Image 1 (cartoon, rainbow, N blue to C red):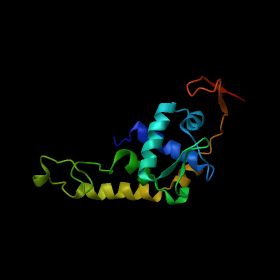
Image 2 (tube, rainbow, N blue to C red):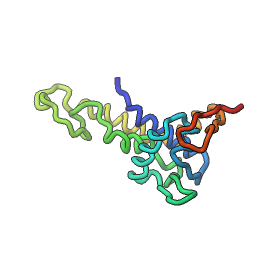
Image 3 (cartoon, rainbow, N blue to C red):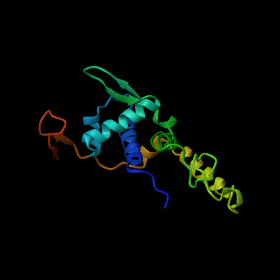
Length: 157
């Protein structure tokens, strides 16, 4: 099974939430309320995404993070590469940095490259904007019971 890590999945979730309203600045506690992620997890992912240049970090009382580019210009492949590194289905594909002990005599040598290129191309074709359009789930507003980031979340109707 080819499976992305939870952190990568959460990175796409965070980017999708930020893309819903263009130009919106959000903090880790804001994203925690909107996504259900814990504040430390959201903060860690935001730092990684900002370091990569997908997000801008803004300081000050009204600071937080915001998208650096329009969601239509950010591919899912970019987000995956930021969170995971290069996508490589086996250790012998072009973008892998791992060494294969049987690479020199393997009958599949080079064959996996075709699959790897197809997977990468498919992820390049899907944009952050596409992901947001496909997930139009109704939003249930949530508020914190107090001003502290770890205060319990109350679901409102």
